[in-house]
Amino acid sequence: MKWIKVGAFLVMVGFLVGAAAWMHPFGVPWASEMDDYFIANAQGEAGANNVVTSVVFDYRGFDTLGEATVLFCAVVGVALMLRRVLR
Amino acid sequence: MTVVVRTVARIITPMILAFGGYVIMHGHLTPGGGFQGGAVVASAIALLLVVFGARRLAGYKNLLSLLEDLGAIAFVALAFLGIGYTFFRNVLAGSGGLFGMPVPSGPNPGFLDTGGTLPLMNWAVGLKVIAGLGSVVLLLGLFGGGDDR
Image 1 (cartoon, chains in turn orange, cyan):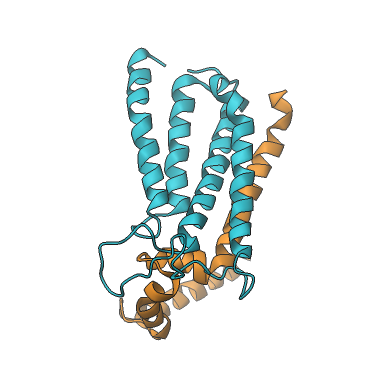
Image 2 (cartoon, each protein chain N blue to C red):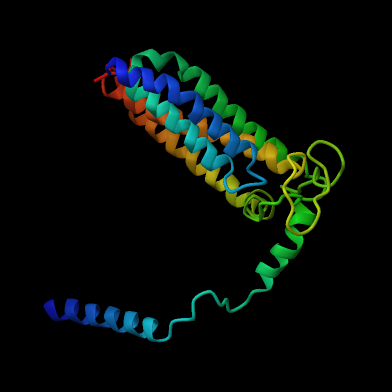
């Protein structure tokens, strides 16, 4: 059992060292087509200076809908958990 | 809390509310948006909760619930506004109507009357986050007995 744990640890360390050795240079994306598209077209298509907002609320609106649902679920969970104490 | 804390809270709460409203309202121009501004306003609610105690704010529970529903319904309704093309289509952007001013490409000072549905969605999500986080901290405060210590 002990040697399984040590082996798993060594494999993880190996992966980590490998990832660090082959690390991509910082700030140089592999594929920048999407970034260039957003920078060139977000102002014209979404009509907002803040490209992040236009991505969050326009291009990826479903993501925001999911986030709002997660928030709603959190509020419902808290309200359910504390309901008996309040009355 | 003591009178010093209460006085400072009375002075600083309008400032926090104004800053939160600014972050929500200018979400399509400056860094920030509905989530961030809503969190700022909810921090003002948490401050009031700590200073004045949860019992004095317990009456606002129904109002917060109503705001949360209103925000969620407004968000989905704004998404349905573009159903003629696709769900979440920004139909108001560049149309010349409400928030429909065309944006000059490149760096510009930023105009409030732009963005289409983005500012409206920012307000909807902002209301939702204000009401959601506010009711969470309010419920947690009421859970602890509701007296100010």
